[in-house]
Length: 262
Image (cartoon, rainbow, N blue to C red):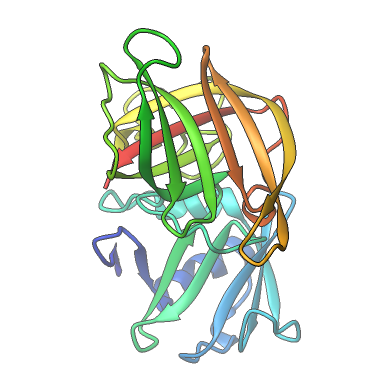
């Protein structure tokens, strides 16, 4: 099968022929008639449990043909290839869709990236307070690599020490399932791989509060930020970010927080 990991970041490549074959089997539609030019995009938009795939010249094109395929079924199909982890790395800059498939590498491959998480950013630790909470617990203060989010997080420092200046990938998700789907219980059962296998430190907690905060910028103009508060058995997270990147958060959600040093 022409499926492989594409770069060190873990993005998946699958040949157009293989994807065409799968979509044909899943939808009973001959997708070989669709345009697969190098500058074309296959753009999915979430519709209940399915994705509507529209074929057009760019992401704003609404005149192209379209088919619908189940998101979980597609993820399950791709996960059969053992050398692939669909969620190895995640692009977080795609809004409004769970999956993006784009033609790259001279039109030879189709690149897939999943964006089903509540939050996925590279953060940099700017300060640590070891006296705020409990013994062996530190409160870290960090900001996003692009300076578009700020957080304060209580971490069990004897298990996972963090230092100022260090960078981490921080992910918040409602599930540890590799295909982004909901699963009964907190962890996938048996030998099934989970997102926890890709990270060093994992917590599970409850989002108990959300608010908005006015944040002044240089020049006197302000911007509204969404603030979420999550409790992990008493350890707290305060996360402040742009509303466009915080739209999946809801009060009473149970969420996983995962950290991995970069």
